[in-house]
Picture (cartoon, rainbow, N blue to C red):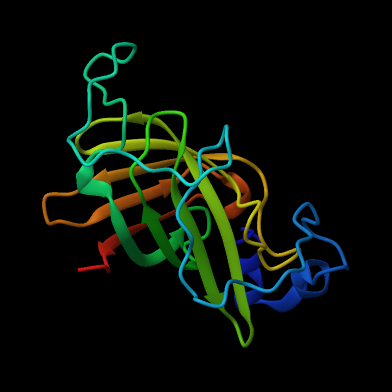
Length: 194
């Protein structure tokens, strides 16, 4: 996610110099490779094997260790979802989130996320998330920086965080992050792949 202090840059440039790459801020993500040329996130990988996840197309099987929970990502979440985010801590915009969900089981990466923000220059933050719990309408995932797609150095958080996605009756997907360093972003996503 975009570093929460970045919102302060849009209001007053006091933090600007401390957030520029190489001058301070979060330097944990120092990837320098160019982004993928297709502009589309690649499919998530199994966090244990590093292989692209491929799951069955059947409805989720029940997880015996989680009463009422699913052992894999429900079909209703599979696809590409996009929408604007807002920081709960400041009320400021937090860019646009694109979440690409693919089939996968509990404990595997099931979503690749891209948060984009334009402030006269482009900021792009990439992450992946592992499915921790699932029901027909709600997901909890553990997010971390995407090791295969570099983010804008110094301007994206790299701390793992819990994410929550909830299907709404109007067909949208409610998103919220527990990542305090990113300003606790939240938003409503719509399906963008048809």
